[in-house]
Amino acid sequence: MNIDYRTNIKVDYGFEKDETRPITTYSETINNTKCADYHSHPRAQIISCDRGVMEIMTNHNIWIVNPSQSVWLASYEEHQVHFPNNVKVVSAFIDESRLDGLPKHSFAFDSSDFIKSILAKITSFSNPKQLTPQQNRIFEVLLDEITCIKPSLTFLPTSHDERIKKVTDALMHDIANKHNIEFYANLSCVSPRTLSRLFVKELGMSFGDWKMRLKHLEAIKQLSEKRAVKDIAYSLGYENTSSFIATFKKHFGKTPTNYAIE
Image (tube, rainbow, N blue to C red; front, side, top):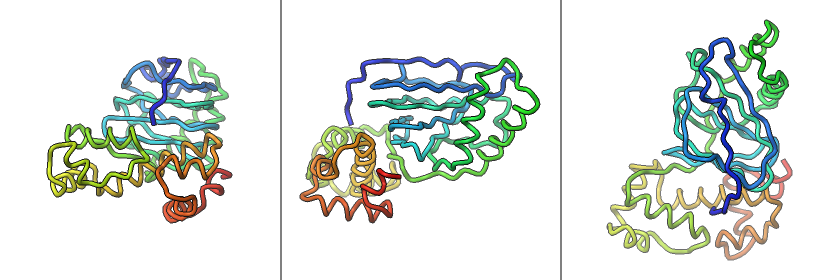
């Protein structure tokens, strides 16, 4: 999951405080890029993409987001965004004054065609100094839709516990490894039982489940890069392609090829 990002970008819309301009948007096609720094801003944010895959990180989660999904970033949530390869990003920033009743926590969600259409329409307004009555009604519809969205499971929880972080960092740097929990327990200087308990306590899932979810998210990213299913399977440490396809289908309800098509 490590990429040498060549370009840094800084988008300032999230820092604006202006009740008369309750929503601003940013849309651009970018390649091999990341936000300049970890940052937070007073405006809440919806971030999505029409093409490519984004990697969005907070202090507690990592999301791998494809065009069928978006992420809701709550006001003042510290985050970083990576845009590997060619990504068409679409982002909307909502003023603090309009956040009552909206989610207080950040999460990924499945983007409906309706929400995508509303975001596209609002983006077409080109950030006017003040919304017209008609534009404001469309914005109100977006707010209503945001109150109804439900979190998806396409995230990877993280922890500041140094024992956990040492293990998760090692796993992310070598996704194809076949080491067992005893190996990583030794790496973090705890017993296997302690490490197992730490994963459940800190991350809400077992060591094995976390490792499998890491593979799933990396598979999604590689599918977006048009890599062959066989190549993805071996890069993730599977002995053969059929094992990878069966595991992927069990989790996502479709084969990797069908997932990529959709």
